[in-house]
Image (tube, rainbow, N blue to C red; front, top):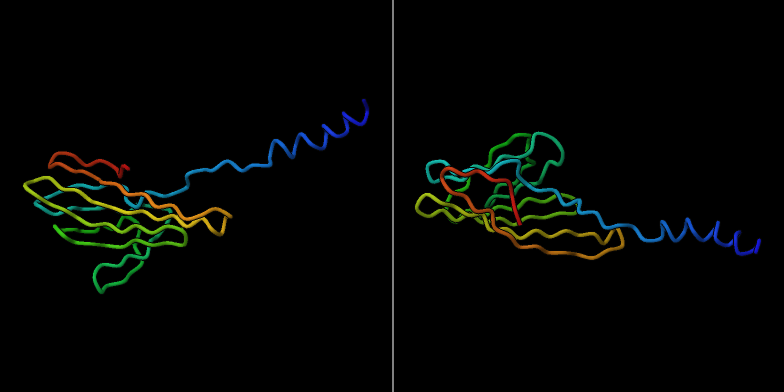
Length: 132
């Protein structure tokens, strides 16, 4: 009986902590997105991750609170150490959509690469946060 108790004492913590719980730490790229006069305004967060932004041939590091203006057909890339977003704007008759592909590379955590596609839909009077 004593051996069983000793084994359980050592085995219980390893069973309890043997599998890490997957936590979705994927950041949303924008704090707020809205449409004004046919232009999509995408607001970067006021803190946290600063992204490498590529628009056409321009490269820069985003700043906190930065506003990115997107017109119909514009395509941008946001990248940081483990995440990448490829975003394309579509603006038609007062409504707009941002189509995105998000790739999360968790290989350095012993996991794989995951890809998610989504749409951020906007109307003139609406400014939701990013949704998948």
